[in-house]
Amino acid sequence: MSRYLFFTIVVGILFLLTFSARYLLRKSNRLIWQKKIMDRLARFLPLFTLIIIVVMVVSIFFNIDKAFPFILSAVLLSVLIFISLIISLPLSLLTHKTAKIIKPLNKGRRNFIKGASAALPLFLSSSSVYGFTGSFNKVKIRQVPFYFKNLPPDLIGLKILHLSDLHLGSFFTLSDLEEMIPAMALHKPHLVLITGDIADDLTQLPTALDIINQIGYLYGGFISIGNHEYYRGFDRVVKIFNNGPFPLLLDQGVTLNIGKTPFFIGGLNDPKTLSADNHLFLQKSLEKVLNHDNHSAFKLIMSHRPAALDISPEHNINLLLSGHTHGGQVGFNGKSVFEGMVKEKYLWGKYRKNNTQMYTSAGVGHWLPFRLGCPAEAVIITLKNI
Ligand SMILES: [Fe+2]
Image 1 (cartoon, rainbow, N blue to C red):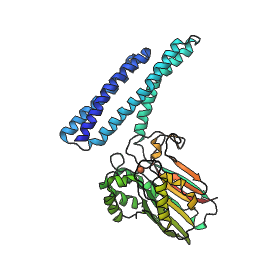
Image 2 (cartoon, rainbow, N blue to C red):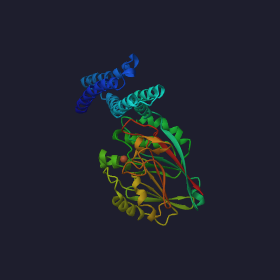
Image 3 (cartoon, rainbow, N blue to C red):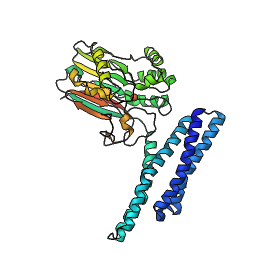
Image 4 (tube, rainbow, N blue to C red):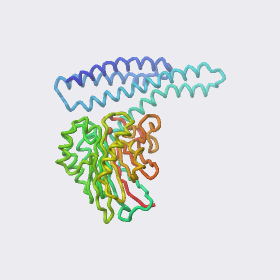
């Protein structure tokens, strides 16, 4: 009940703000935004928030718990559109005024700038809607080859299904997971490795593990822990893992025999905090993990945090699999647009430091329904010899 009241207040404020946004739009470019069709578009925003308020009140009254994801999505969508307007309106206003003032501009150029200034709020708002709807698209199966020098012949062509950050709950559900299984099984992975943040709704976790187990694999499947496992209740989560098909590797590792080649898989612990500087914690965890290694020919480490790449080369780790970042959920050309802009590094894709290579997954799911140029993904990694 309290969360609905919280969102009622948020949406109420948004309603007032979106109402003012319409006024500002009309001020920013009278010619365009006072046209009937554009004005209707601008009116839609406060109307949209009004609809959400009505749905929320009805949900509270009838105690409809299933309405929660819808309400959360609707709130997020109005916040996104509002933020787009907040960013674009001053810019739009400025370019519009500049076009008016600069005398040497001929009429054609001036009209072009005026048009662009009017289109800016529309462009950013529609990008928000596009990103929001993009979060509901099908999970992409991404095939990623990794090349190694002198890879033992037994490991050439080894296929690993890497799943991370499923965040099972409101926006990624058991039926979404079930839908993905045939496409993943088609690749016939030899190993299934899951790098944490599997479920935000723990009631879905046991079934989810059983569903993933249907994929089939030759050598095994393992889990490493994420921060959300701690947030949802460590003891409860571990109990579910212990009763499930995939062992949890927590500060531990196992050596598998792939043909005649010893292949080590270790799982790092998660520092729980949201700080990006977790090197000391990860270093200690990695040392504990490597105590379980007995001269394997290949070392693969699962670390929910991609920061482990900084400490892995000195331990001769061959391959790291990580997640956590969701790729920032906004990307361009296979890279996160936030790479280099935030303290957290290695946000999405392939990385290399000396002889250690890493893949950071953009995640199978998310808890925030917005993805623009950075689709949810399940990754098939294939080991290859250079
Ligand atoms: Fe995480």
